[in-house]
Length: 203
Image (cartoon, rainbow, N blue to C red; front, side, top):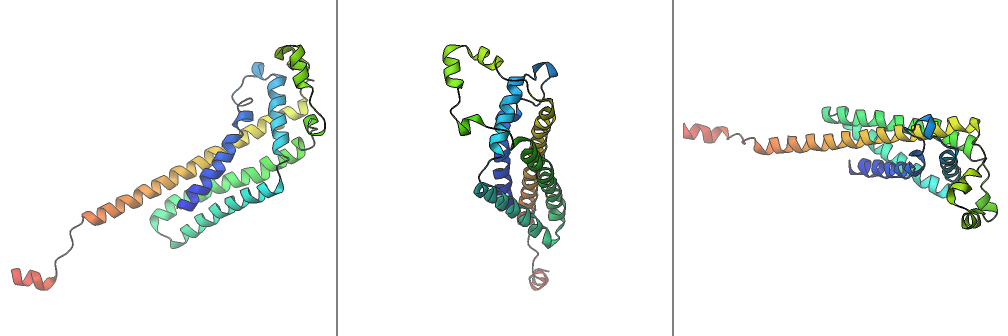
């Protein structure tokens, strides 16, 4: 169980780091969806789509380890495991499917092609802010492409759903641990049966 909890907490922490971009678009009314917020989120997602392959292998390995441990734990067919680990597998798998079939294609198709000026040439933002105010500099941003608005909002929503599913896995694993501890405490509280010979002598 500790492997599952550690892997799930690790993946959940990775998703929480995206909150700096997701929070700019989630639960915001259309009036507050400014181009500056959308450009900031899109820039973060464009950087995220260029993660080194070595890190992707590490993240995939942790995810596979957590999933394999869940399936292995389900193999003893105990009632407690069927309930808690079965629900955990369902939530864990839904998060994995959401990420593989929604998040990754969205990043690769819509955000990886975006140019990042600060990767190829020095950004003029520092000199611009030195001469003008930050508000004036933000007004110089080009209009956010309508074709990119939907994928930006969808990516933040997908991250949120993955976080909710993985949080459910942690809750179910905590419930399993509590149930196992309660069973152990009940077994310790039960009096041990007396041997038959000793009971006959006493009678």
